[in-house]
Image 1 (cartoon, one colour):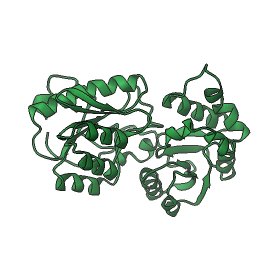
Image 2 (cartoon, helix red, strand yellow):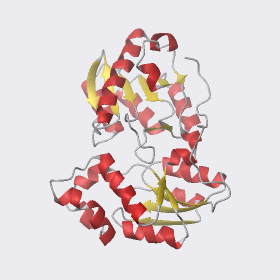
Image 3 (cartoon, one colour):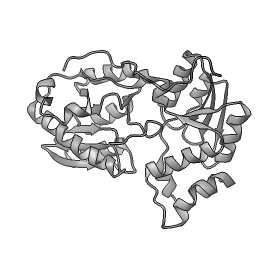
Image 4 (cartoon, helix red, strand yellow):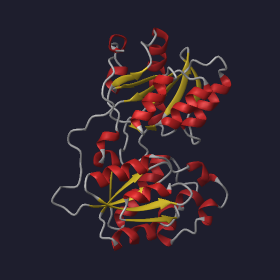
Length: 311
C-alpha cells in the first residue's frame, strides 16, 4: 500500500445547492474537529451560525462564524429558536460530547433542561424502558430538531475533505503479525459497532488488550498500555456497520497519536472514507517522526484475503 494524498472528495455528497440560501447551523462539541468544520464551511461560502456546547466547545470556533453562542447541552428548545431566528434550516453537528457526564448524578438537571429537552431525552434517563446507547440518544436528538423545523446534515458531506482516503501514511512495511492483528481487531471492532458499544480495540498477538466503551478512544489506549508494558500493540478504529454519518463519526488526530506514543502502541488502522483525520499534516508528520504505522483501509479489503498483498 503506497503512501498518497491524505484525503479525497467523495462523489455524490449531499450538500446544500449553490442556488439555495447558504446559511448553515453548527452544533459544536469538544475538540478541534468543530473548528475545522466551521473553517471549511466558511471557505465554501457558507454563513455559519454556531452553538457551542458549554464545557465542551472551544471559543476558537467563533472566528469562523457569523454568530456564536455558548449554550447548555440540554437546551434543545433554545437551540431551535437560535437557528430559526437566523433563518437557518440546515444544521450539522461536529465534535465529541463526553457521554460519561450523562451518568453523573444530577448532571442533566444542572444543565437547566428546557421543556423540549425533557420531552426528548428524559424518558431515556428516568425509566428502564429506554436505553442510553449513542445511536439511540443521537437519533432522538435528530428527531427532536426535525420536529422543530431543522434538518441535520452530515458534516462529512458538507466538508468531505476531512475524511481520510485509503493509504499508508507513516511507518515502514507492516509485519505479518501486525496485519493479522489488524484483521482480527477489525473483526472485533465491527462487532462492537454492531452492538453500539464503541469504535476502537487494542490488540497484540490476536489477543484483545482493551475495548473502547463510554470512556473514549484515548482512555482505551492508555488502559492497553497499562496492561501491555512491552508495548508494540495495534489500535483499530472503525465505523459502525451501519454508520450514520450525521453523528459519532470515527475521529483521530494528534491527541490520539500522542496517546499511542505514551502508551507504547505502534500501529493505528482506521477505516478509509469513514474516518475523520483532524489536523492532517501535523498528525502525519508526528506519526512519521515517532515511527508509528498509520494506515487507512477499505472495509471490503480488510475482510478479504487480499489484505496481505495490498498491505
